[in-house]
Length: 214
Image 1 (cartoon, rainbow, N blue to C red):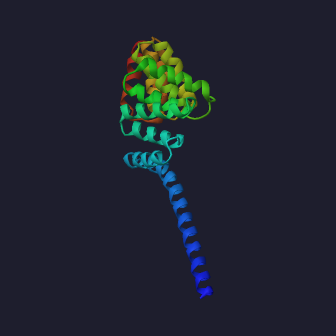
Image 2: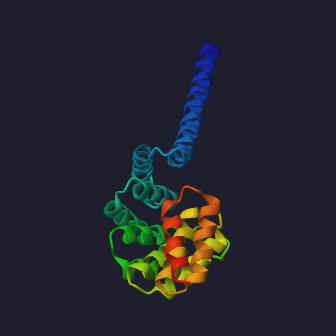
Image 3: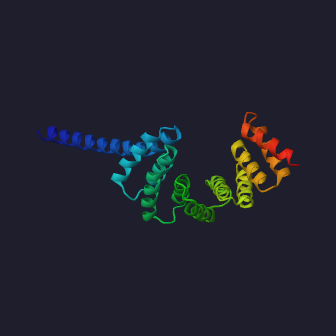
């Protein structure tokens, strides 16, 4: 009888430990899946997983970050702004949330606030790290919106220096230079865009306009 009780107790303990281990693995996999879903372009699913994670741990900064990345990609900019602000209440210096909040505000047309956030983000991270190229790109676009074309030239030049293979960014650099009256350097930027993507029609039209002004 004692042997049966001991066996039953041992079996119960093993079952309980196995259940706890599987639950832990399942939770860890769920956290990993949120980022993987984001990388796979499954933004709505990533958002749902992050919401579950934040219910379990409202201070999980990684969940806030992946949530906001996914919301921006899903064009839910107001929600991204809200969640990024919530995450920054947990840690006001999380550079990832600072940058993605800047993106959300950029798409919401809040240019001054977005510009300040991108400048703050750049001050937090090295020029070769994170999303610095994107931050400079968005700053350039804001300056174009404001008609500050020389500032846009500087920011977009930094953006393409950090990420030189994006034809659209080169095209926008060409436009900023064209609007600033720097036609020769505008042609160079447009031609670089076309070398990366021969089908970039905006770059072709911009090159022709700038060449006509030389």
